[in-house]
Image (cartoon, rainbow, N blue to C red):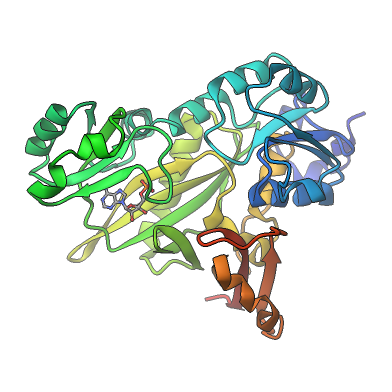
Length: 381
Ligand code: AMP
């Protein structure tokens, strides 16, 4: 008798989940590709639910290793190590979207990989991502044009009115792999500066602010979203996420609907971060999706201290085939990332009654490195 049948009232779709035969039981092991702070926090949430984790990461100093039952240090191309890893776990998930396609393909021969291959493929390529978002998920995005050469860039700029953001299709993050083009000087040699890689040119979005929605989708298709967060970046790295976002209620609902459409169109299983631009046109507010991250997301760390079920537990529930929990927010919260030397405030933050500190256990502090975060709570508004 499956363990979860004991709680049918809290799980209306449980029968459907069980029929799909993809449910983990306490004591089973989740495989996680990547051993950074996100993997660490997934493993901590899994442990709370009586599940074990097996982390696979090439870096022997991975912060996630110290909180998981089993670890493998090996390259993502090591077929033998991947095979024995896959055989030791009941499901595989990942904490970063650049998992090589071949790695996922090897693992899938033995075990389910959640979120599935389509989410990985789409989020790894900005052209595929933007095409999917606009055509299949019916969400608004900035105008975009495929660009492979300097000549194509110049033609694309003519179409977009002379300005745009040139972005490599693959491996861009935290503002890397992109050039803002506003003047003729910016155009010169731009494709070469990005390493002559396949790219896209996007129209510049005159956004008032950036927000994100953390959405979760279960094996049975149930979708739950957390409240949108206002995101503020410093040096292209997320510095704070504040909830509730300072946006009109109908804009918040629209953002949630967009995230729901995206997760559903991808037949997604797990937690995903959806980043959006908020544009103000006089009295009206418009949204455009910037990108999706098929994993737990830095802008969702506030959920850990402000919601009954954090994004990490929600991800574990989803990939385990368990019913999703409540994403309802109980507090207002500002999440502050501790980047590099910011971490030195850890001690004084302990004296703040409403501050909840999380440190990632990284031995070495480096500039730009995420070392921990603080959630500062206040009464819900
Ligand atoms: P991305 O790597 O796509 O997340 O972009 C990093 C940052 O660059 C975003 O958080 C925005 O602040 C800015 N950015 C990206 N795309 C655009 C755009 N089309 N228009 C204006 N700003 C952008």
